[in-house]
Length: 206
Image (cartoon, rainbow, N blue to C red; front, side, top):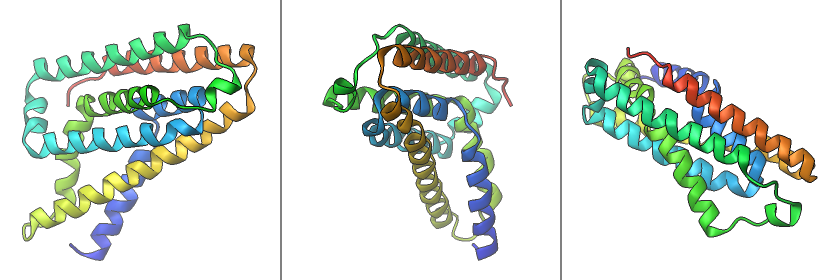
């Protein structure tokens, strides 16, 4: 792979990742609610989800999704309903005070990891994206090594992107600790997740 092609991949991937989608909306909403300590489990879930989607694409599920409307719609609705569930859960959650939010329990960390993993991995557009995007930057010789390089690069960029969004959003948790403010933060984040679920439900195949 030439240096020019690799730089092109870096630029294209960065632009794609910067645009907020359901995963980033989830990261921002949860980071605002739980603070900066939530960023690592959220980002780890994003990377694990992208790795899963990437692996499924390379194993052929991406091709199957592109031709099977039933499978595409099944994954789409599972992801959409899960986002709406998370949004309702956040909307109705009891605002937490500063003394609670500064600590992140193990169970909360696992829950954050699980939510970002599921939302990222079950997005059918992500699975079909990898199988359509990566081949544009792979030459016929040494394809396995090139795919490994591109995959590792994309996962690194995805982790950095989630960390940056999470760090930015986590600042609001430090600044807005009064219960009325946190109630509106929860409702705003819940509304964003519900909206992301509705948008996901409206995804079209292809």
